[in-house]
Image (cartoon, rainbow, N blue to C red):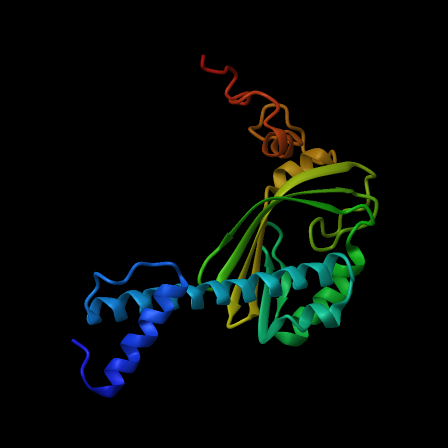
Length: 223
């Protein structure tokens, strides 16, 4: 049981918090009252931290794809960030390395018709993970995604998963994933015949559920 004036003040603050949350606290003893209030306060703190992360992450993405602003993008990151596009190992490490990559190989290499359709977002205690479908025309050399591949003029639709890890409210690093075999198939550099690779069907299945399951197996089980 809380004792002394400090304990009474703590209990009263806990009771005020529970009342404000609409939680009936009359049946709780002082120890349970304080413990319950601490749980709520911790949940509020986590919510505020996650809100700060998602706000920064959205600003980071907007600075890249809408504003095309290297400085604004870097302002969302820690002093020692790194960036990795996993399928092709493009990116950079350290503030100068990441900024140089953004300036030379990323922002000026984003196709003009690049569009992102969100699928889902998962927020953890120190990271944000976005699942999305990205569409674009391969009408310029896209260093970060198709390095040293001349423009083909082909349309590409590809699911992408982007993980942003945080230190405090700043982006610490990014890991970006996609199926490079699907991209190569869609631009005509990989023949899908005889290999288990799905092209634009990946994106279409995620977006609207069209197309069969198990087509690469050769048959679809009933039901």
